[in-house]
Length: 460
Image (cartoon, rainbow, N blue to C red):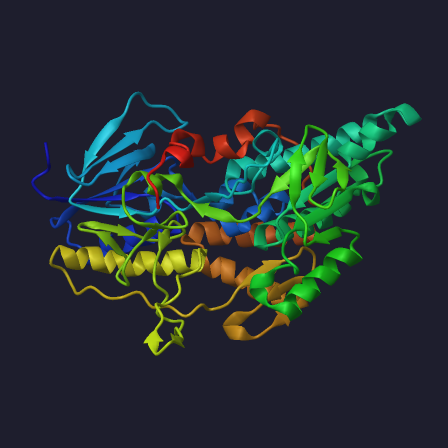
């Protein structure tokens, strides 16, 4: 039975969902509506800092922002949104990995769909069984411990020719995707392992082979050619093999075959070759644009339904479209970035409140403030307001931006404290081994296997 008051249900506790609910808690009187958040975890993971977690620069809990502490008036329902019925105005919520029995059905009067994105996967033989993403805390923790374990085993192998092949496999890391995540993970982890080199008795970390692969012609293409060239030079000076213009053809347990025919023997494959909207969007029966739910400029996707964040195709009014054949072209779509997700969440909170009679709806318009990438040590690149900055100044801007964007003061203090301690003390190198390998596979860690496969989903 429906509640007497309106019920606003938000799917997804990421940047967009959290900021939308924060805004709703501020502008909606308590008696105006009940606020409900559906999320598989009770925290938002500040994903831009996951490379710091992999490189042991940050304690994992410090990039996890408690949803219950930040959202005081919102009821949290732990679980995965499996589907939404637009006719009956209900959402089916399945249990999360933390437990729960059966499926819960929630009624909604206003629905915000903000499930975020997942790591983009391709039909490459062996990829699903061997590749690991860096999208969740589970994956970041596993990758950190897995790297240490591989080097520990390589260090303990007998120094005999019969073990040379296995040693090379364990000392080789292939990372696919030279965007933000892939580049930062390789750069920061490479720097961290050099700082903890005394951990190993017979192993020289210079023997670790790093191979960064991307079909693009540049590293960090979103930052432009100059900053991309700077990042590429930093990586190559550190000994990282950067293979551009190629991708992965197939993966086996101990080898990765590239599209140019090169076979790389390795035991570690990091996959960060782009993102895709949550597969939940394909279950809604609404128009999609490459997996993202199409919305208008006010982020409305249907009557009573809004969508924001990485899984929403929102018109980017801040980028002026050109003209073709005398007609105005439609505006491009906003990029799937945390910056857009946060600001879309704030605006859609106003718009949902307006639909309930509190305030006026507005179109989303935001000019990107710039992008940053931390390359480990004193190296970084930043492009605030279009100004290209490298080195220590870029590092200061990158870390300052992340501290500003973290949506919790306690997390900001803890993250800043971790960075200071990491700079003055010996870095941590303990392998906790708390994540099983099968739990860190992309489909499992990101819960993409709970939805129908694309072939059986409604056409976009």
